[in-house]
Length: 262
Image 1 (cartoon, one colour):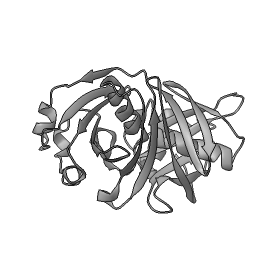
Image 2 (cartoon, one colour):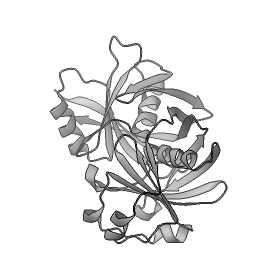
Image 3 (spheres, one colour):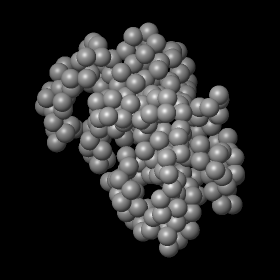
Image 4 (spheres, one colour):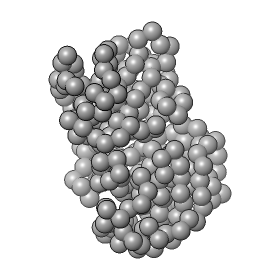
């Protein structure tokens, strides 16, 4: 059966860029394999499938072109936008395999609030980075989202721009490379294990960054994160955190509607 997929650009920078997302609200009769096939056909870094019938809190399943994700940021932000702007009903919470997230709409942006309870290793070995041709970072963390995200901090934005990893040698599910000052960060995220060599805007990576900061004693903060320019898709994620939770937010644009079938 043919069904619509709302195609969004999530975490835009103004009206430009943003990470493409497919949101399928009609999942009646779809199997897991069919959802994965639709996500692969759409080819976006993620697509979501929303079970909202007879549920107080809609349940969101998230697929990259290659795997199902327990949690991801831009899919939940985009799905929240669809539920609250296109329907079938407004919701202030969504549920995914790791639990519920709170949803807020504020001055044109969509925010989700996520608990910061992920396991983290401070200063893990960097052998995998070096093997992939990346330079040694100033600091590093391994955050389990629950998939493993290797978080590497570099001294400046130019260092991040110049990174050219050997994708085949990246050991963890995702590798987050960033540089920051007091209010802004420049981030890149590589996830070939999920079928996405480089992601334009990665909300889960922003949450992992917040978790890394808390693990290193920075119990609160706020950053505007720029990502995606290196692949021609400029994006911006707003990040706030305390020792207990992170909030990620940004603007969403409805790009088009496509018809999909398994």
